[in-house]
Length: 252
Image (cartoon, rainbow, N blue to C red):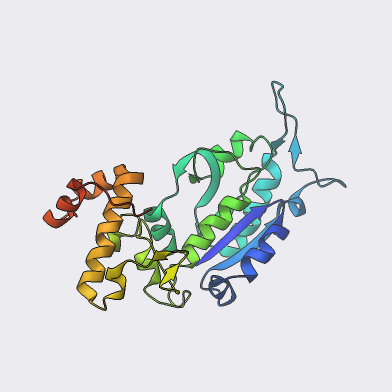
């Protein structure tokens, strides 16, 4: 898959693409990331990409023309109809289901906005999908683009050290959309706190039941909406419901 990123700050992506386990996806081009510096498509000696908003007000607005020229160059090189994605507060919130869809796609063109926003005429003409990370505002779309790329990259075969690792992530359908359970490592006792006995038992069924119970408890405490969704989808067993009916353990 290929992701073309339109940005004013391509240099921000260097460390991100070259560090950590997900760099394997970028180096192998399983996730082919291509950076497009928007100023290369601007007019004049100053390569201006923004201007004052009509109607007045603070800040600057990114101009439609440089964005359109950059997108045209990307289209000519890609020769496909990849969707154009804008990171914006009005977009649907990014979740695991959306990431899974992008990870199985041919990619997209990611537009990283800056300043007060982008000329609405470019959005109306060219943007297919708007995506939000949540109810807060970033200085630009670069961090949001990295979040999407990282989430997509780790779902690609061979990227993580353990092929099934992402199947045990929070929100994954393999966990029925629940939050993940607590994790422990050596030593067995730290600062007077022992590792839960079930995890030391060597009994696989007992370990899995402990983990399932903790997932249910943590999700009920922190994200009851996920419990409601799992219940509505028929993903909770009678044993699960019995666990949820008990007072929660102090697991976090």
